[in-house]
Length: 239
Image (cartoon, rainbow, N blue to C red):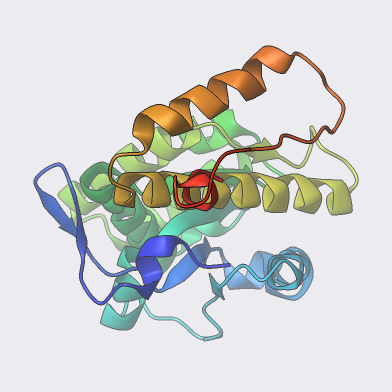
């Protein structure tokens, strides 16, 4: 599933910033040693089954510096899903991904969904517990780069304050994965709907009227809405 803008050869704008051409529906950010062969593999498979075009980094060995190709992949994604695990903060690579993701959220309006896997949001927010221990070990290696450490810490706090999912709340894991995939689908569908509405000239009032009728029905069950009229007045476009 790709959002409407991904098929365009030109970039769109968000505020005063030019949004890079979208290539991926979802970018998965995770610490490989914690989650690659279990949670991430199942989540990635579930996303693929729904035809959600997902970028997952298959490189097993990482240094401290994030590659330009990964930075580009983040920029060209509609949604970033961050899997915070116990050792996530032990990787400067992962934290640079996080900083870039939040930058894209601020500049381009990218959607960010945090997932707290076997840790609590407060541990990410405050860098405490096992998560905080991992960050402290990384800080020892970067103790001469105080500003970078502050940037990472601030990014962790910001991300932990976003609405997301926690494995200790949603159990078992397959239900957690279902929740994440359904949320991604809902957000992508909304983005597609918004993109097409913006591209249709002169039908906004008709669309709003149809939407108001749907809201006024007040039924929770599935129902059918018919649009009737003479040929050529835009029934198909509005539908």
